[in-house]
Image 1 (spheres, helix red, strand yellow):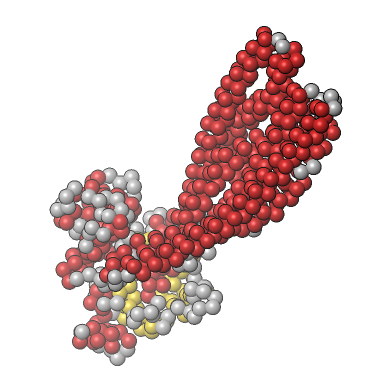
Image 2 (image 1 turned 90 degrees about the vertical axis):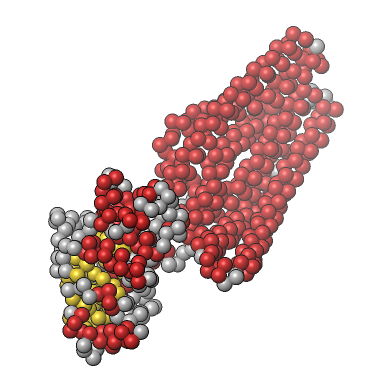
Amino acid sequence: MSPTPLRALLPRVRPYRGRLVICAVCLVIAAAVGLAFPAVVQRLLDAAFQQRDRALLDRIAIGLVLAFALQGAMNFVQVFLLTGTAERVVAKLREDAFAHLVRLSPSFYTEQRTGELTSRLSADLAVLQSLLGTWISELSRQSLFLVGGIVLLTLTHPRLTTTTLAVVPIVVGSAFFFGRRLRKASAGVQDRVAEAMGMADEAFSQIRTVQSFVREAEETRRYRHLLSGVVRAAISRAQQRALLFGVVGFVAFAGVVAVLWQGGRLVLEGALTPGALVKFLLYAITVAAAVGSLASLFGSYQEAVGAAQRVFELLDMTPTVAEPEHPTTLARPVRGMLALEDVRFSYGADLPEVLSDVSFTMAPGEVVALVGPSGAGKTTVASLIPRFWDVSSGRIALDGVDIRELSFADLRGAIGLVPQEPALFSGSVRENIAYARPDASEADVMAAARAAHALEFIERLPNGLDTLVGERGVKLSGGQRQRIAIARVFLKDPAVVVLDEATSSLDNESERLVEEAMEELLRGRTTLIIAHRLRTVRRADRVLVIDHGRVVEEGTHEELSIGAGVYGKLYRAELRD
């Protein structure tokens, strides 16, 4: 169960306690001025109607103006400091949530829509920002008005105070009853907003597919349907909020009417002066308004809880692949000896095994190809080596150390991955290459681009290395994106390289250029080549054939290609194609 927003936020607010103390002092001064106002009004009315003292009336009026000027200054300081603090706290919370999310293993993202996650970072945290920026301030202010008003009411006229406070239990009960329903309704709204954002994000990321199948109208219809769910949930939330405000407002101000009626009778009986009645009435209105505001704030708090719990649920999630508490340090330089020992793996407890008793060793600098039919488990092996997932049993060792004993920085820093579809960011070519080492010099970036055979096309781009590649690198061809990915790995300079179907989606000319780049990359590095097209594995020192999650053959390309096993059949089928 996630903590309440206030409890969860306390550690993040604590560094700003000095600012908050100043806010509290300003708030008390401003509230004191507000509470003194009814007493001053009584003096003013008595001076005007009973004493008929013009000088006293002027002094009281000037005093009121100065008091309200002080109140205005205190409100300014308090709001300025509290809003600034709220911005800093929520920004840090966003940073913490993002830092936590990027450390969760890929298995988490197979079950989550990125649009829903960004909704939690934006819309849900905006509710928390409102909670910090205005809710706490108003809660403190109205609490002071309520307590101070009740004390001053009691001192003014205990009998009328009893009438005034009779409505408080009804207001509090209504606030709790409708508040719980409001929290549930608010969480429903946030869930539906996140679902709609997730669907929109998915459509935008697959816009070419949407348009190529002429599905714009259908996607719009789906989005409209989700938005109608948002509207229904929002209307339900508005209904609960309206009921809360309506009931509380009626009860609170019905109490004011009762006080006015009873006080009027006391004035007629001569037991109370008109000035004292006005003073009492102003205090009663202050208390009624405070009770109504607190009920409203309670409703807002319930809404914030519904949104905040979704954020703190993310922060409470533990990675399925976690770093060791006391990691072992790899010896330097990393040699790159890789061993898989009796590795078994399944993507879920209720799912069939993808790998079964897979064992092989790669010597430092050796190039090994892992081939087999689609679905055999090749890419799974590539994902297990950098610990995107953990093995179900067995172990993977780098330089003799179980990779589960290594820090992510040590393990993943020693491995360079070139996937089938390289992921480029929407910045410049330079930024994408330097992603491996942000502090790299211009000469290092150029050298990596040259080694990856990427410099020849980079120099033809409008702004060279500073050319923007677009989201996911859409402005570049597949071969160009792949060579930038290889340049990135060159700059990283890892001991182990994993090539996962790195040329399978390229045309012949692009494949030739990428293969030339890979020839440079593989020199002196332990390399695992995951391949579907067998002509890409001829450079390998050794070929492993995996089928149905098991290594079924091992040898050189020449040995296996003439055999009657899986590799020989795949090779001859490729030749026929």
